[in-house]
Picture 1 (cartoon, rainbow, N blue to C red):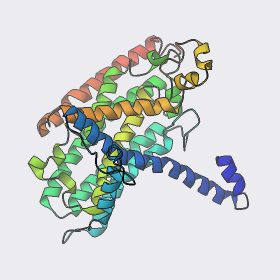
Picture 2: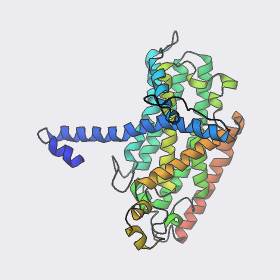
Picture 3: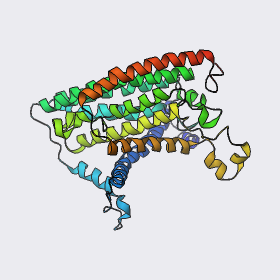
Picture 4: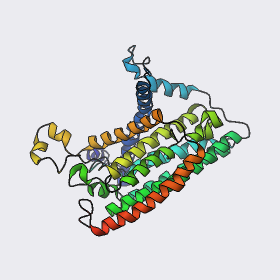
Length: 366
């Protein structure tokens, strides 16, 4: 496809052709991602509805047909686009409108280095993991700026609480990712996935890095301010947190950023701990199984496994929200600082010993 586009645009300067092809690749990644964000809200309402014995959205469809309420995300988007954008008096207008972009920008930019399969990746850079850590850490500035620029004490209180929570869990998450770096010996996501080849699901890093895997996922829930870690937006405590003064599309962008970050954390978890595009039975089942038409395609390595693993993580995000009550703020901070960070540091020491000992099947080659 890219070769065909390049040949069609061959009359243009090569530098311009390169820019156009990169922009096309970005659109191919971001457009489905935005659709996934919209329909993740629908999935959340339907799944939690089923868990609580409710129906969920079921009225808005397409062309006069209800179609299980599949038109609901489109209706919500149109409603938010048509709402008036209210900016508070004495607010810093530029920073007020910049803050939502600082939250959603990193959630989209991080996808530049995440491989969908062995070939599909926008930028296959050697420092991919470092890039993701650097880019995603920008989001906390969006939270702080949103609270400060609103010129509201409620928003500022929410921003401070949320920023403290994000920074606290970012440290534990960073230590968990150091474990992945130690296990794979590379910052390149493609190399991290290929390091999990061999014995199917038994070779995935989730087994030797199990405590780090659990810490990473729970920290991801806390980083996105999702229940049960959503005290920064707890309506019963401080109205709606740092975005209390936002309305219309700026509020919608905050909403999109939350769900885009959920998808990003699920994608990263599947790549770093569950083998990304690798099949759970590759290396375990005989090669003849993968030669069966269609069935072999489904059971073999491919992008569908990456998406399936992401879907499992996203389901856990929704399940947690439906199951657990909200933590107190002091409990959240204690969990981040006094529990997760000591666990990750201890397990990094254990992991170092395992690597030196050549623990099979994960570290036998080293």
